[in-house]
Image 1: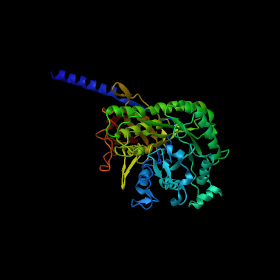
Image 2: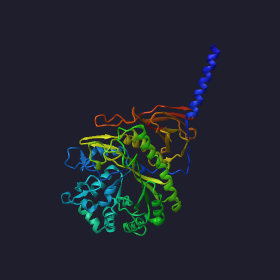
Image 3: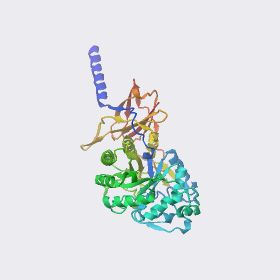
Image 4: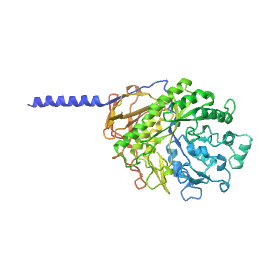
Length: 515
């Protein structure tokens, strides 16, 4: 009888081992010599004059009791420096094509006001302008990315802004800059020529905008673009592939440094759902929209490859993130929403997509940095909290300027109501010191997943891990519990003779480091 029980136990164990092996996702990582570098600018951010992003967010004024430098909150500066923020896009967004930069320079008491018709109908006093933003970028150690006004501005106005910020010699605009207290130019490299020209930037056709772009771009620099400006075209709305086709066909490549793409993860534009009180079905729909980024990047890249096979023009996803209904009781035009584990999963999955397409995607800007949409920072008067999205971007900062290690695998499926998504998202890189980083996301809201990675060829001897997870998908950091969701040490892996077996809990983000 004992022999029969032993035999049955062996069969059961063997079956379990076979099932576990069958269920595990095998990830292959290639140490390819000609793989691209993951541009640090993929981890960029976006600050629009919208809601409490600038005023009451970044900028509190130099008379505020909140510790600040020239009116910019010191705690936000410290948090973003810790995040290694590489670039920051400003002043919009839709606001950019109504913004006239000369309204935001000179003595603050003399600056004219403007009504922000796009976002809440509030009066903008222009107390935060070019000097404030560019000096703040210097504090952050981040490259500024300025969005020029094409929709309601002029060619001369944008050319003057370039001269004001970048010219070191004597000229009308550099003299004006010196008069306003700045001797040396800031040397701004990244310039957006309009924003969402197909919509709030002018409701233009692709053909018309291509002509406008060529005109504006011409007068921003000289024949050879001696200043080294990266001129960025207003790109498509999500899957408008014709827009990309027309621009790539009609704009000379020597005038085009980057081409934008905008895509938000939205359930339904007319019924976006709550930022916190959502169902698993709503979570699934959000992730379905977010993971469409893979298809968008692939198809837009294919069009760009037709006209630019050497990949000289960067794809710049300068607006992305989750978009939900605003927090109850707040101004609907301010787009203030909470940030849960759903957003952490969304951010990790999206960044993996960008990493894996690093040959073409060379800049991206999460919308937005403070108090708006998928923010990394939320403030309430003197208080400040870091969101789950912030924590993911900090965990992933190890990929900045690291060499991509291409990954291949067949993901298990996450299924809800008969529809399925890939449950596992992954990317990997090797930094300049030889450390290997593997970022993994389990999208599945209920089921843990096992991933097996062959690390024999990566020269890894020791492995450490970090995880971001929580007890509920809807959990978030509040001003009362600011540290509810923070990265912790991850030990859910085992190295079995060069086969790294990793057990990832539901809706979790993991980053492993191998040395």
